[in-house]
Image 1 (cartoon, rainbow, N blue to C red):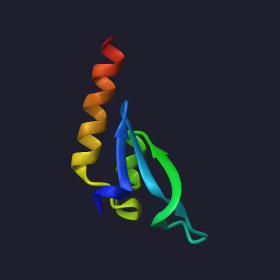
Image 2 (image 1 turned 90 degrees about the vertical axis):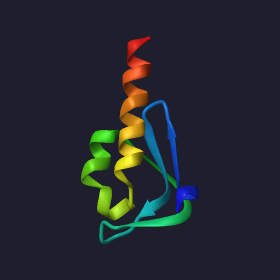
Image 3 (image 1 turned 120 degrees about the vertical axis):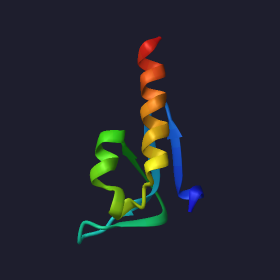
Image 4 (image 1 turned 45 degrees about the vertical axis):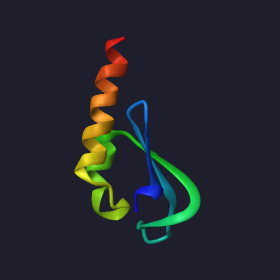
Length: 66
């Protein structure tokens, strides 16, 4: 599951695409980008964990602090 997620500079990148019904299909080769705030509402559909959200939030704080 972790190969479908990447966190860079406070963004959560998900390897997947949105289907017609609004759900997210993982592992399709498409790339979706979520801020930590968007990821909270998409947790169920994209299978984003609180750990991903926390890590991206901390990276954003560190990046903005520079």
